[in-house]
Amino acid sequence: MRLFTLFAASLAAVNAFQQHPFTVQDRDTEPSFAPDTCPIDTISCQRTDVDPCCSPKNGLLVLSLQWDTRWGPRDAFTIHGLWPDTCSGKMLPGAGCDPTRAYQNISSIIGATDKALLSELNTYWPSNKGDNNWFWTHEWVKHGTCVTTLHPRCYGQDNYAPQQEVGDYFRSVLDLRAKFDVFQALNASGIVPTEPETGRRPKNTYTLVQFKQAIRAAWGVEPNVKCIGRRLQEVQIWFKVRGRDNYYPVDPWGQDTCRLISYQQKSTK
Image (tube, rainbow, N blue to C red; front, side, top):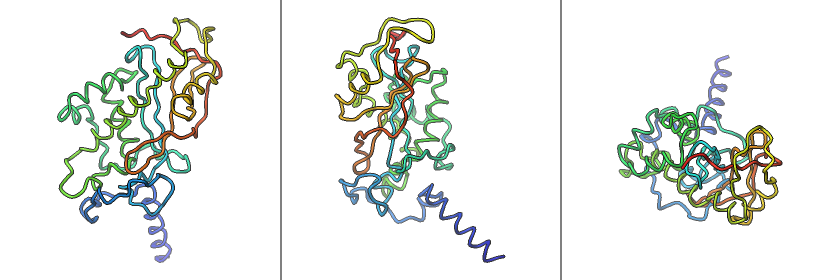
């Protein structure tokens, strides 16, 4: 019975490590890490023998961009999140990947060191429920803690400032939104927001094919497009990572929920 118990405990530990490749003690017991030793051409999800500081262990990620007519600039999609998945496309645990870094005061952490970043978050990553700190905290705990290349150990000996990875995560997502500007990509293909219409089945619509062709024309891959009824909700672009943080788009792993798409003008300024 004792041998069985020890075997079960060992198996549980292995499973826990596979989901959470770092543990609470890592930053004290792991050997120091030198970021400049990472190969720059490693592609996420291609090898299993790479240090998770050098290439994201959860190496398939989706950037989800929202179109909510009540929030954000009139000429920009706002951010829902950047979500790491397993290399087989499975979602990670809903509680995130590191309870020791489940910080609850994201706006305070960022505001204390980078007020410009905080201002940009308020513009391009607003909560549609009106509580930005709650939204950012949720996204950090559930998704940010699963980006293995942002674990404190990955900064190298003596180069880590407490909670530094929080700002780095949000900065990287904002940069991705700016680089993959869905509003401008659609606009370049003649897809522009239309006059507002009431009801769940507005007639002034685009097709899913038009949206997919516009994104493919911009970046060589198709997105997933999400709707509520016919109303556009989100455009999602999938990524893998070259090296530690060079995100490049790949074909989608998710499902579309639109056929006809109502893409209406925002009521914001």
